[in-house]
Length: 265
Ligand code: OOG
Ligand code: MG
Image 1 (cartoon, rainbow, N blue to C red):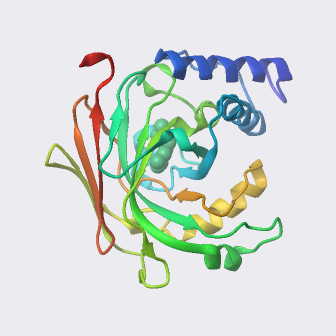
Image 2 (cartoon, rainbow, N blue to C red; image 1 turned 45 degrees about the vertical axis):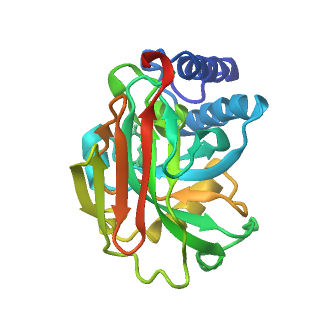
C-alpha cells in the first residue's frame, strides 16, 4: 500500500491500538506502508478515543530527541505525541501496573506552558510562555509485540506514551541555563542510567522550537497549563513490577514513583 491509506484502514488501526492498550495485549506491527501523515491521523484518532471516554489532553511529548534513544530503538526522526490527564501520576505516587505490556522508564525534562499559544506564535513567544521547568519520568509501553516498530508505527501508537510523573516545578526565570545538567535514573536505589540534558537536541530548550514546529505540522495545540516533555536524556530501562523509580536533574531536584498493585498483588 502506498500513498494515503483509506480512512477506514486508519480508523481500524486506531481501534486495534486502543484495544491493545485497554487489554494490555500487544499487537503485530501494522505491516502497512503508511505515510507519516497517515500515522499522525491514526494517532489523533487513537487519542480521540481516549478523550471521548472522558480523558483530557494535558500536554505534548517529543520522542527520539537524544541519540541514546534513537540508537536504542533504531528510529532517527523526532516524533511528537500527546499525554493525557489519566496518564499523570503524582510525584511519589503509585502507578497501577495493571494493563501494562512491557513498560520502560525514561528520565526527562518537562516545561510548563503558562499561556495559550496563538496559531502564529513564534519561537520567542513560546519561550516566553514557558513558566516552569521540572525533572520528569516518562513511562513508555509500546503496544507492538517485542517493543519493535518503524517510524510510522510508533507515531500511530501515540509514541508509546503510557504515563508520566512531574517533579517540583522551578520558575523558568530563575532556573538558569539548562543546557548541561546531570541526569540520573535510579531503580530500587540502583543507578541505571546517567546522562546530561545536553543529550536532548544539543540543548533541551531546543525542544520548544521543535515542539512548536511539529505541533503546526501535525495538528497539535499548545495551551495554558500543558506540559511539554522534551524527550529522554538516556536510553529507556525496563520498569519491573514493584519498582521504586527516581530521576534527578542537577539543580532542579528529583521526581519519583512506585510501580505496582494491579493483578500481581
Ligand atoms: C518511543 C518514545 C520515545 C523518548 O523520550 O525518546 C520517547 C519509544 O521509544 O517507544 O518517548
Ligand atoms: Mg519519552
